[in-house]
Length: 208
Image (cartoon, rainbow, N blue to C red; front, side, top):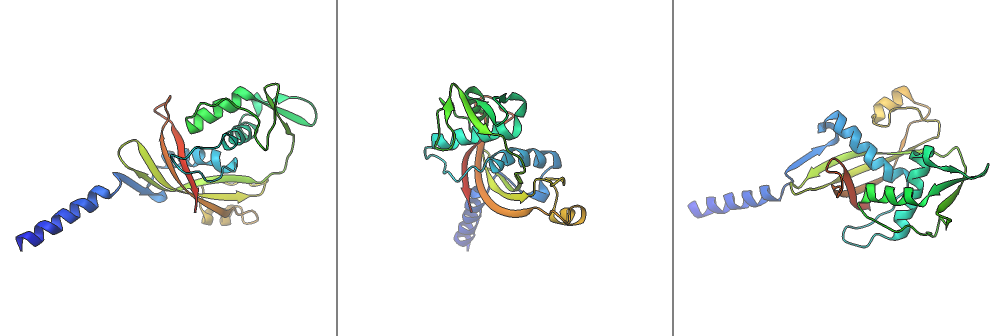
């Protein structure tokens, strides 16, 4: 009997040691922390970053495309107004965005989608694109500086003016004509930024 109890106790310890040191679903997260995580992951969702797996080499094209799109969406004040038809995204701004969000230093170059000319990526001026945002659904801490979890990605029309941190019930009540649609789900792994302990960087992003 004592041997059996010892075995059970040992098995329980193994199970407990395998659990994340800190795990939470969306409703259990602090509101401010949850909103900050939503904003962080929305940077990747709105830039249409595709799946990549931790420890595999992240293609330069993926990082450049992210850096260009991030600047177009979030840093319009830093764009070069080339002419009536084109914006210019600075090479150094793309490199800075990649380092900030992926923790990787790169020498930006042309990608298959964006051509670098005289240290600028020329992007057609456009309008009317839909709103894309993410919401963190699961947040798990391993206790060793690595966090994993799941995010939902939503898409709405360009005229959507609702709360991107809201719920389906809230959207149906306040924006019934433009309720965001769940379009993708991603699992993720993040670590602390190599240059800012108050920030995260994305090291794994896999569509489910």
